[in-house]
Length: 469
Image 1 (cartoon, rainbow, N blue to C red):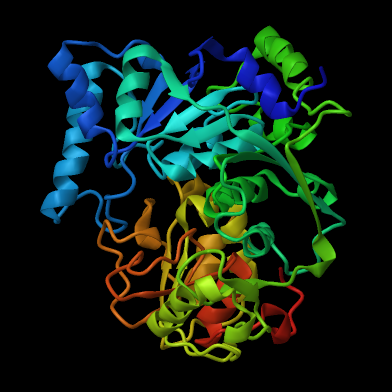
Image 2 (image 1 turned 30 degrees about the vertical axis):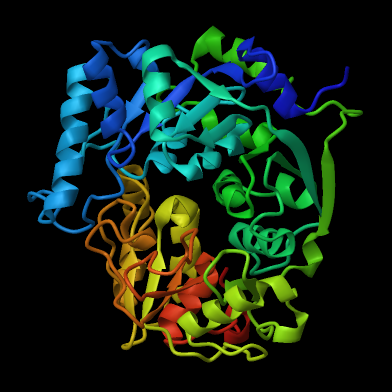
């Protein structure tokens, strides 16, 4: 039988199948952070168990760590306790651990791929929904709950129901100034936040094939926001060039053997998906969100949908979202004043995002009414920013680069947007209070964020008549 890419990897990792029940799936790599792992390690401790395969577990604190003064003790008591607990657990159980300040510290979904820990054909999990990011290398990667984290620590396996398969094909190439983030927000807006529930998505088509690895990570990262179990992209020469030479990638003859296997990781020509959807990349413009879920997105020059175009069953929540955001149905929001701009997160905290942002603001100045948080996804990204001189460009434009961490993606550290303030954010979620109690989040890509940062308002980056992108 012809197989999809998902089928090939899943089937290779099946340990057993419970009759009329879930599949016991072997896991090649698990990532742990400070938020969802404490109870799992406690569970092992109570049962007198060790971590079954500690070399396949990597722990990194990222959600709670500050992005300034990391050399000092964490001020917030809850955050400090969570980070200290991860430190204790990682050392006690002998797993790989990159603490705050370590050269490999950063956001776990940035650090994993950039060190060659995430490889094609793997199964990967983490107690974090945006684990789907790692599917960009051609792997099955998905988030799990805390009890499942304990299960993987103890057995290197997890019970999962097999999801259905979906292929999303994006034909043609993205237009200038349209980024992978815009592509992802467009797909979510078309699919809705529940449109891929129960499916594992493979992205394909000319637009996807022409994305950089950074762009592919962004696209797969956001798969969860349309309800998908995960997202993946078949590995190709772009993937192999990205992985080769990274610290934990195979070397020498092991590389040749791995590469031969990785080249088989494509959906067969006649493979049948449970669902297939096709989009045209030429229809996509720079995107923004206007509501309180990632599916409430539109082209930056479009108007918020009129109430009578919304399904009757969704109108109450639609109105509630607009009331929270301070917007009206039918209005355009270009020209609206913004207060904060955040560049970073596991969605857009990579070197490509900083190149795009710096290229756009070069020779300009940050708007005086904007507080800008520019947060690399890892210390490796920070190092590359400085090696390329992007830090000088950004400093001359009035921006400061903060230290790596999840930062303003979520209100679990010091970087919180105040109530009522508008933040143009390159992160992944715009739920009520996601960036701070009462904060109003507008999701966008790096170029829209850069345009907002230098004008102090929501503007189409194409309208600034610049050839920088």
